[in-house]
Length: 319
Image (cartoon, rainbow, N blue to C red):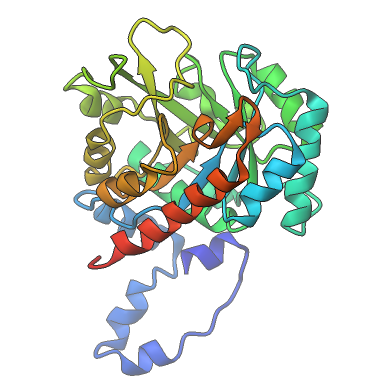
């Protein structure tokens, strides 16, 4: 019912479920027809519920041209990432980004940005965890047609908003040291994914035992989602390491109810292990499916996305 409400549906017909209900009054109450009732329901469920719905979002990042974007879309990617961070080997120009956006919109048979409903972004009277759970569900719905994500790193909100409007980005991703509050949709022009660096040694070991508790304490209602990426100790830039972090961190966060996207070192050969072993809400790949920096290996993209989707189906058995 809440998803219908977020999409602007003003009325729905409920019949068979009430006829079959042992207690129609209780059944009606369970539908949370009043938005306030739904908020109470979410608040109650989030006190003890782990995230167990499995992998719903696949993001292919570092796209620099329309052809690679279309390959990712045709194979089932939900999010297409274009990088604006100037130090990246995959940094795109405004014209490149616009050409990718045009291709993704054409694939999704749309001519404008796909926007979240105001109710999906409203965070009054709910906790950061409840906010992120609600937003993850809204993103799943919206990303049934691929969305374009602009990736930024320590760049001004003025520049981010300019690129959002000029290129037609659906979402942005903040990959620097901007903080949680910088990811508010009003500051960025569109909802923002907040990247959290998981600091490790160069071999993926050595993550702090307090990383989970720290992140749960740091989250705010500002981001649309949380993405975990590997950061090598001593490397100030973060991201693009090609190294996996301890996926057990993602599992522990989701056991606390926080859906997360994982990135860092994912490739066609290990994505199945990530999805079946951790069951993250989302996965993100860039260099793991490249022929060269900025140029995708189309077979690798296909194998990665298919591997993730097949593993998600397998991992969902028993849940």
